[in-house]
Length: 442
Image 1: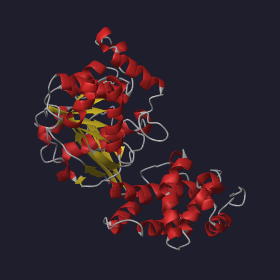
Image 2: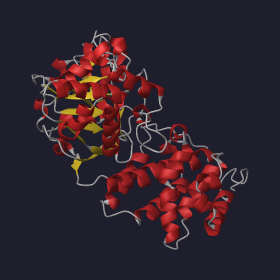
Image 3: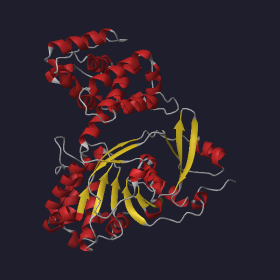
Image 4: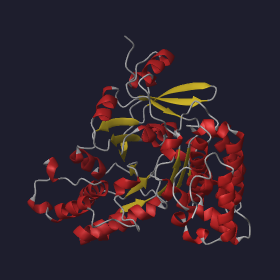
């Protein structure tokens, strides 16, 4: 039987010290932050203790492999396999005690998060949702910490921010040095919103902890990007054939990776920039570039592609009609973006979209399409109309969304619905699409 991938697969490299704690262990973290850490020039100084959301299965499998896993970069010309060893310990997220201990340890310099947007439990208008039952329960628990047995797992907070705050509380009590929190989820200005949510939470439970947060914690804003499709059961066999070792938890991803960060790291950080990460003063323009060009094109393809019989991004982008619509949308959006190497970024996006070996399904992108179009298409359309241009490409995206049964223009954006010329452009776009006349655009 082939050997299981392990530290031996990395040669004689020493195990890095535990200096980063991560919450939300999954495929994306292993394809992104863990990959960047492994590729940093000072990787030997930065090991990751990674906690799953809750389930122990992935932690158990990674622990059996000493934290090592195979990253499969799936390019158009073939696969590249690499053993990644930056995760030095994998733990189940249900072990909140171990998480708190790791966060509070003085050598821990960074806490990274990939927990999905919903896990932060923000209110619809923004900010921590204090009416959320789980948040309320965690606040009550904190207020009664002196009267409960916190070593018993049932006494621990259940929310992501509650568990994070418990770790920070322990760090405060231990007089540990300041650390950086790095959220890596798709929230606009994610560092700012997570910082404010932690401050709101702390204000509800501990004035001392609230007052300590500005000096004890820095929250870094990020923009992250790397497509990581779900791994099939056949992948273990492919990895074994290519590498000679077995891997029960390989990760498949595209060759492209992007990470932009803005903020301070008071206790230091890996040389992620040596692996291609970019450190900037303001995250906003980079977030907008990704939102309008990458995510906007995805939403356009998710609307137009199925109407033309396509199921994946690569299939839709190979259709000349769909690709022309994407290029036109990029032209419109680029007119309202600063010069952030847009030509190079568009070239990279086109190469990614055309990769047929990364199966990015349009049905998945189309989920929650109303919200996505409001963020990805509507802002561009409004700017184009204010500039006196027809916003034709945006109208195509909206028209396809309506034709696919997504909703109405009035529901999407009343301001655009009141714009006679844009409403006409949407109607004309719908007439050119398969099934485009079936749905009222009102």
